[in-house]
Every structure is written in structure tokens, then in C-alpha cells.
Length: 134
Image 1 (spheres, rainbow, N blue to C red):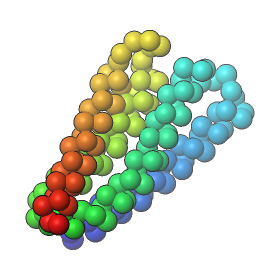
Image 2 (image 1 turned 135 degrees about the vertical axis):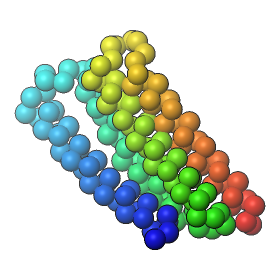
Image 3 (image 1 turned 45 degrees about the vertical axis):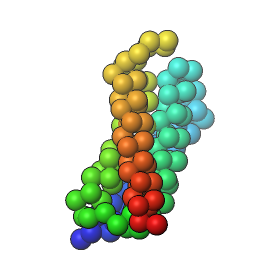
């Protein structure tokens, strides 16, 4: 199968995990609001929101990827960078809420920044491919 046939399936199934995360967040907020605390709730919301928005972006990205005229190897690399970036950026917020401290960097902070870099690389590659193919 082609990367643009498999990767959207991965993204769509990942949206289901975001839905579960939304359910978990709602449960914490409505039934046990003090369990997370303001610091952890803020990072839970950030990780959840970034995951949802970036996964929807990935579905649009994967529609445009074939138009860039890349070979399968480069499509796989771009798709992996994109989905890896989504996972790293949103996952970094969750890692920070688990082990980070307010006002200080943590491995979660580094992971979030790494995810942003992967996303930027994937988006710039797609834009360059689309410009070249035009």
C-alpha cells in the first residue's frame, strides 16, 4: 500500500484516542476537579487540543502529499515526520504534566519543541514539493 493510503488510517484511528482524552478530561473536570490541579489541567488541555488540531491538519496534509510528486520513500519520510511531530508536540505537554514543574523546563518541554520542529520540516517539504510541481 501507498503511504498516502496507510497514514490517513493511522491519523483517523489516532483521532479516536483524542476523543478518549476529551472524555477523560471532561470526567476530571466534572467529577474530580481538584485531582489534576490548575497546572496539570492546563497542560492536559494543551496536549489534548494540539493533538486534535494537528491530526486534522495531518489529514489535509496527506490529501496534498501526492500532488507534490514525491517518490514513495520521500512520502513515507514526510508522513512520518508529520505524524511523529504531532505525537511529539502533543505528547510533550502530557509528559510535562506528569514530570514537569511549573515555571521550569522538563523533558516534556524538549519533546514539544522537537515535535514543532518535525512539523515545520514536514510542512516546508510539502510546500516545496507543491511549488516544484506547479
